Amino acid sequence: MGSRKKILIVEDNEKDLQTVVEYLQDEGYELITERNGEDALDYMEMEKPDLIILDLILPEIDGFQICQKINQARSYWSPKIIIITALTPVLDKFKGDWLEQTQANALLTKPVSKEELLSRVRSLL
View 1 (cartoon, rainbow, N blue to C red):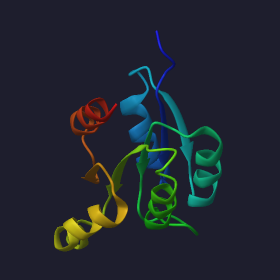
View 2 (view 1 turned 120 degrees about the vertical axis):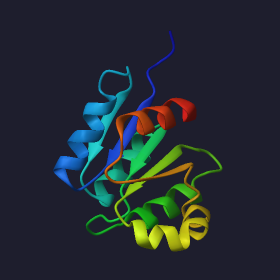
View 3 (view 1 turned 135 degrees about the vertical axis):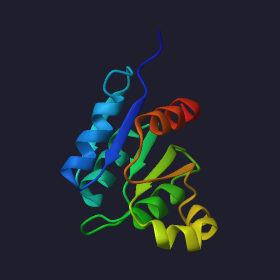
């Protein structure tokens, strides 16, 4: 059996973070959680996770900036990205631009359902 897929979950809201972890904990992935963009970037540099589940609104370094950094590294590391955000009205208006800007593979709005999250994660990994 190959090594377990690594998923980095970046979310500053404790409740939302716990929800995502609960959804994924029995799936056999290695889960890493970070509460802010800076710690998330440090972890990414070292560990190169396979998938990043990312909130856009984060303290200090936001999800957009994290995506920019990932996109600059795509020549040697190409993780899948799922963005989870509560910014529904904004997203509805700019969905195309957002996906283009972030190069995310999927965009889910909070509160995210377990079925939706699991099916996205499985299809990407």
